[in-house]
Image 1: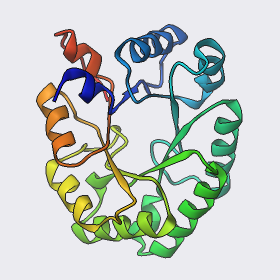
Image 2 (image 1 turned 180 degrees about the vertical axis):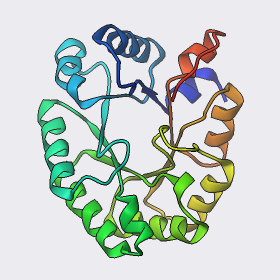
Image 3 (image 1 turned 90 degrees about the vertical axis):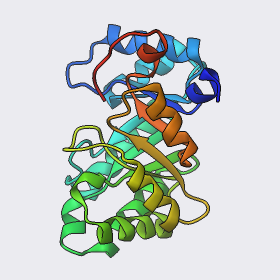
Amino acid sequence: MTIQEMMSHVDHTQLKAYATWEDIKQLCEEAVAYKTASVCIPSCYVKRVRETFGDKITICTVVGFPLGYCNTEAKLAETRKAIEDGCDEIDMVINISDVKNGDYHKVVQEIIQIKAACDEHVLKVIIETCYLTREEKIAMCKAVTEAGADYIKTSTGFGTGGATAEDVKLMKEYIGREVKIKAAGGVSTLEDLKCFLELGCDRIGTSRAVGLIKGEATGGY
């Protein structure tokens, strides 16, 4: 697998609370240069990135991030505003409290509503695997499939753990055929990147990919 093939699956990410416009601009310039799948950025920068870079890049942002327990109406408002500002893809965080309460139907219904608000735009659903039991992970694979989302995503990168090979394998077994997998959090080497792609992930969320290619030691999501 070539470097360019790997980069074409990367959601080049900058979601730090203190990200400046210069940070975001650099991220976008790197995304154009390395032809990444998208940039994943805070929603407050979506409009400016669209105005600055036009159609040169695919813009992804996050909704209900990083904890997921805001109400559905708030997530819907975030989604609609992001799309209005020019966003192409939405990465939403499920309400993990609903999962822990065993209210899987409520999770499904929320995803359905946000997918409807996305219309033709891509929806990725972050289930934050580090907080879930095996049974809950399986239930979320089924929920994401039932709700018609485009992707299931392992992690926010802000929890107690990130993507693991074991979780990706489990997702591959239990998601529907139409659902793709995004691994995020803790992808720290090119070998990690290659491994997750070979396991069947279609996207990798990381801030490190460009630095790794340049041979730089980087930290972050």
